[in-house]
Length: 202
Image 1 (cartoon, one colour):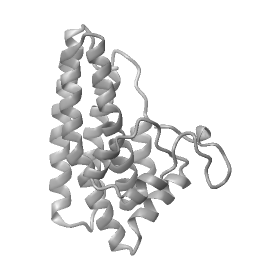
Image 2: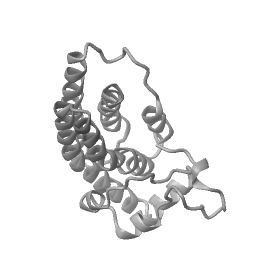
Image 3: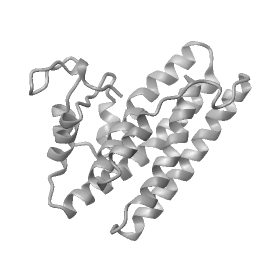
């Protein structure tokens, strides 16, 4: 679990820096915001990597996946999609799973790893909030409704929210009640009649 978390944090550094490098025609504050996120993600990675080393494991000793970077590649052409699907979908997932992950570490007697996960989860909220801010700015620039655009992108990519969903945290970072109510959830059938368990789960 720690190795998977380290992999997520390493990818998060690259995702933030890629946003700075890739997108132009944005306000000056965009670069500063995502450079700040990258600095935070480096710190998170170091926390988890340090804990891994205490168990005699180095980052890279175990397998990883390319789900995060695959999403970066598939949203490279469009700032609206990048902000919707990386910070507002993938990073927001960390707000959902962070607390139960910390509880799992605590329950196994690993209070130090639990504390790291809790600190990371708290610091991820401002990152998702930045994603929400820039998603809404990007939508306004091209005349899109943010809520409908977010829900459409989830449907088009067959993405859904799997439990647990941290509704309170998501509201704090900018998700509307309409988004939280209407987003595809595990256990519901989509508008095309297909069960969302056939959707890609992240």
